[in-house]
Length: 381
Image (cartoon, rainbow, N blue to C red):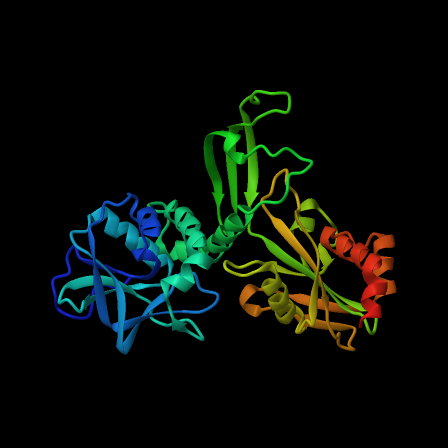
């Protein structure tokens, strides 16, 4: 992180905060203490808060003729400032010395570049969509404080935000008309460890849970693979009765010992923080196959392997016009995607089910659903 620059004021112990960091629920998490920082309203001339539809944490950027509203915190404890610097570095911000409209010198965290298609940030627009995600993301991010560098945090931030989005989405829940309505708050967690902290996480729980016959279970140790939600969509052209499949190398089959670890799948991708599964489905079809979907038909939303993974799938059929070519290429170089696409007749896709070549669970579910709804979809095409 760069050193202080800008005006020549003494900024020792003074800090200007704005955007989510000026909101008490987020600031308390990042600071590591609740309500202990005295603050007063302040304005930072020459700067503006900018954001876009896909950004949780807005960018404080230099803008002549603008002014950013926020808080001035004086006499910031050194350990709190260190924590704030860690998160700011993880968000790609640089430390700058500036002067508030009130004449106080202060540290602020400035982003070198505004988001694309940036607009002015307002708390009223931001909080309903991003408030819960920001709190969950900061809780995970600050768990790395003292053990990771800001650069290592920055590498993890996209997945941290996606996991936060999944956690917020999970809080809605689904009906419990047949299954037990016992709440998660009845589970007694003895301790939690995180033995692996890479792009993905594994968490090791020691817990007791209520039993159907009454009472609590013995102390159990359970491991879970913590990932984000995913949107999965099978593109289908009802006029020509064809589907599009993607093919790519997959670590699951390779790690299992499959001699041919290239898998046939629907289009799929991680649901980014703040996105709806429908947004993700459309974005991934454009990125992986160059397709513009006319309409989405929801198939299901479900856990893929609830015994050991947090991953949650949203399955769709995507109605579209498929290209004539039988094979194509897709994917993003920035995500190291090497994808081949196959446009095949519906009958050929069903042959893959019968032969077992279609051994990907979401693909099987999508094709079975299509087999039930095909006549309807072709009738309204």
